[in-house]
Image (tube, rainbow, N blue to C red):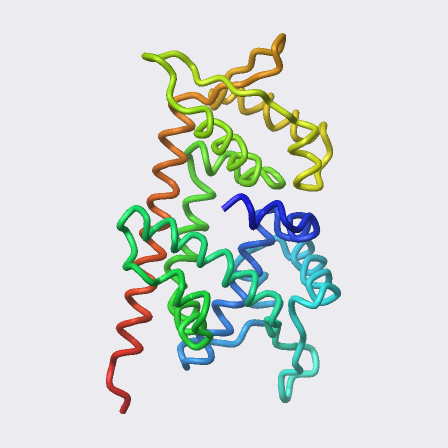
Length: 261
């Protein structure tokens, strides 16, 4: 999962905050719902009404248009409105992101084998999946706005990516003896460089994570250890999310198999 987040610094800059990434996801979900006749096509006003933060989202979608992730299509008979149309780069980014998470679900036995490959290779199924992803979207929004270690991290700019890097470093070290902490070196400048962030931003998240009880630091040796709370709550979050992806896939498959009248 880390590879897809560190390959493109510009993508992390654009989608590193959950409000913006969720708003972009909502546009695609609404667009695909409308394709199957199950909802309205997205406009900026509709997305703002559901997400809030009107001024922030207006600027964000201006950036998405500039970067080629969305286009605008006039609404017939309404000169003040325009439909937001997700462009190929947004679909491709979601395809990669969903297929990575689906593969994790497959590994844990939560999703049927082959789901990740189908999302990656079958355009029609990807759109059908996204057209049935309203519950997945709503559950994700609710969970990331609630309590829990991962929800707390996700509120920071690129907090989820920093959390993934810390989890990856923890699991590469392996288990410690008994209840001893699993220490690993913290390379804050390297993390900042990989994600296109400032060093001070990474250090701020690490320091605040310690105050939150998610990790402990050995400042003299420049190393950190994750707490059982962060490990347990992040695992619970990902297992829930991968299960929701599997549920969405089953709904899409049921719709695909249903007879057409």
